[in-house]
Structures are given as C-alpha cells and as structure tokens.
Length: 478
Image (tube, rainbow, N blue to C red; front, side, top):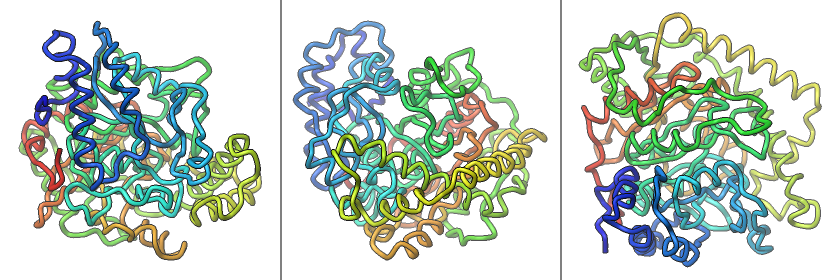
C-alpha cells in the first residue's frame, strides 16, 4: 500500500501528473485507510467507495491542479448530482434522498481532478442539537483522532477528523459560525474561512445572511492555498463577489509578508478563556514578533460585546426555517417534530415566527456592527490574533445532550471567537500552533481585512515553517 502519511494534496497531484503514481493507487490507499479508522472515528457517514474506484480507474491525468487526489465532501449543502443527501437527518436517510444537480463547489473540485470517497459527518441540516459539533441522532458521534473521547467539533467535524487521521489530505468544509476553523483547531489542522463572496454558492443564493462560505480543511497551508485557487471565483448571477485576486494563492506560500502590524486578543470580557488557549495565542504573537512583525495588545473595540449575536441568531433561525421548507418536496410533506432533532425543531419554529420587518432590521444592525468591527483594520492593523476556541474540545455528548437552554450556554462558552468574522465576512484561518499539557492541539486564529486571504496565506506559511506541525500524529492515525 502506498505510504501517504507524508504526502499532502499538492504532492499527490504532482506525482499523478508525472505518472509516478496513479489515481487508482491513491484512491485505493485512501479507502483502505478509511476502513481502518472510520469504525473508531465515525467521520464518514455516506460512502461511495466503489464509485470512486471506478472513477479512478478511468481517470486521465492532465494538468488538473488536484489530479487524482481523494477527498470527502461534507454531508451538508454541497450538492453533487447522484450523491446521497441525508444531511444528518433520519428521514432523508430513510427516503434515500439524493442530489439532482451539482453545485459550483462540487463541480470545481471535480474539474480540478479530485475524486470523492463520500460524505463526512456534520450536524443535522446545519443545526441539530449543536451546529458546532458533528454529533447526530442519525449517525451517532464523530470522534476526535487525538482523543476519541472528545468531539472533533463541527460542523465540519467529520472532514477534520478524517484529514487529521490521514484518511485524506484535504476535505471540503463550510463555515457559518466557525465551522471550518473550529474543527481545524480541535483536530490540529489548517482551516481557512475565505472572505464573503470569494467562493460561489451557485446555484444557491446566500445562506445565513451571507455568513456562510465553503472552503476546505487540510494539513498544510499550501493545500489550503491551492484549494482556494480552485474554488475562488464568481459564478453567473452571484448576489455579490469578493474582489478578484490577480495572482495565485499557491504562489503566496513562501512569499515575504513584509512587516505586518498585528493586534492580539487573548481573552474576551464576557466569557472565560482557558489559560492554555490564551497562552497559545500569546505564544503565537511572540513568534510573529520574532519573525519581524509589529505586535501590540490592541483589538477591535466591537469585540467587547455580544450585541451582534442576537441578530445573527435571528438570521440563522430564519435561514433554518427556509431550508426545511425547501426540503419539503424531497420528503413529500411538511416536517413534523419527531422528524428532526430537538435543536433543529426549536430553531425551525422560532424562525417561522420572525416577521419580515424584524429580519430586515437584524440584517441592518449586523451591517452597521460590521462597519464598526472592520474599521480597526482600516485604521492601520493588518492582522488580529486570537484563540480559535475558548476551551479544549469537550467530551463527546457535552454539546448535544442537555436541554436547549443549557446546550446554548455550553456552546457559547466554547466558541466565542469565530462567529464575528462570519458576520463581517472577513477571511480568517486557524493554525495548530498550540498544544495542551496532554498533547491536544490548540488552534490560533488569524483574521485579516476583507479580501486579504493573500496576507493570511503568506503569514500562515511563515508560521508553518517556523513552528511545523505536519509531523505530529494523533492517537488514531491511518
């Protein structure tokens, strides 16, 4: 079997293009690795192994940037024609609901040469009992490869667990409140949330008031940069787009970032941050200073309060209601309470009760708050450093088992650092720069001004070279 432990997607694709390895060998190896660890991790919930083998056997390598690279697509809002589409829901799984079209993300990944092995674990319909944990009543709980008693978080938790364990080098992910960065932190890998409008959701419109974007999780910065090259770009009819980047993000890896002015926020006034998480952010800031950047203990004043969150929750609830209504033709009737998890039902019902006027008012306040937040970058800073999570990843069940009020409280205490930048549409990346006393990864988040993924890639690559993480192996590893 091919030893893939030290190969990232960039290296795999180069080998396929040169004829040094075949797509069939890569796919076969990835499937064997999945079969070895998935019974423990529960990261893959819908397999298409035989279809992937057939596609790999017929694969004709050309100049595809990700030629022959095995991947996973998230079991959530990433349509690929013919694929199973349970989206974490029992009823949709029982009815064998499948996608009847392909979206821009799946199409671009396919055209770049990737071969999908199936769908990764994510919360029910993007909501469930916890939208930031890959634990569902339908499929059970995904497990963290560093400690299977802990959650890999979510919503891209299955993707992150599979990448961290070495099943695949890269996997599709998406982020509406931190769901690329949060599991990347929990699983010790790289997770970059692009700017709003950088990656098209076509043929869908915006989700969560523009707060949701697609992307990937990976083990290396250059894999994330290459995936951004593949996925970035407008599609016909997009409601808005990010300013096009004139070059290649992959070319930014290793480029001199110059001397950036970087602020640090290692704690927030309304939540307790675990000392290890704060220490990881401060240590990253110190490393950045050693690398020649200017560091100051400054951060956007808008981070001091939670006013934005109440409006964003209202937008999310309305979006949940819209999503469930849009799926009624697939299930053949209206949704009933016992068709979904309690958290999905609560948000669905609350979303139905929001008036059009209240929804628009929430969007307007979020836009005003965004202007206050982003002004800090406009006034001279290049990057902000924060912890990605306020705690180490919790034990399995902690975020999904109690009543709705307690679940909300627990979630807010774990993930206070990421949703702000979904609201503002700014690019942000989580890097595995910290490690707990027990050997668990601790992510550090870097946030740039809107449209500045290029700077994030340059600085992230600089940190990767200074404090490499690729050689670390989790307890459960393929």
